[in-house]
Length: 147
Ligand SMILES: [Zn+2]
Image (cartoon, rainbow, N blue to C red):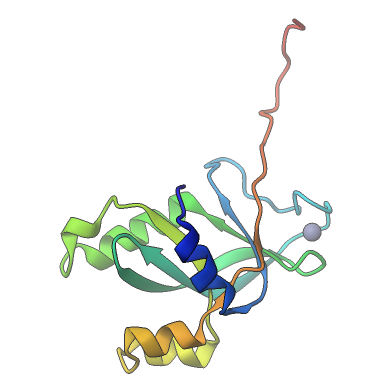
């Protein structure tokens, strides 16, 4: 995903917490943490998603969470239909655009944001961006002929 340097410096001034992994594998639930192999927990996080060109979307989503790594794992295939459904009526042109799961907000801020009580700039002040975004490759189970 392309990111401009101006985006990065903007994000640096924001508060940070958690690490994040967007799970692209339909058949991999990550009941174990891909990093430390501890069992992951199921927890809801109010995720903040930035959709190009200029749309913030809040999604209170059940995710996998590893407390020892502070790692949130969200499934790509679960997030995308929810985003599409949310914008179907209000802003259908945005569906299919590039997006970035950029962080989380506190539960109370999510509730206010969800009722549209906060302006986008107020919302940005409450976002905690992810400290780090990780990526994991999954090698499909099976047997292979050696090269
Ligand atoms: Zn872990």
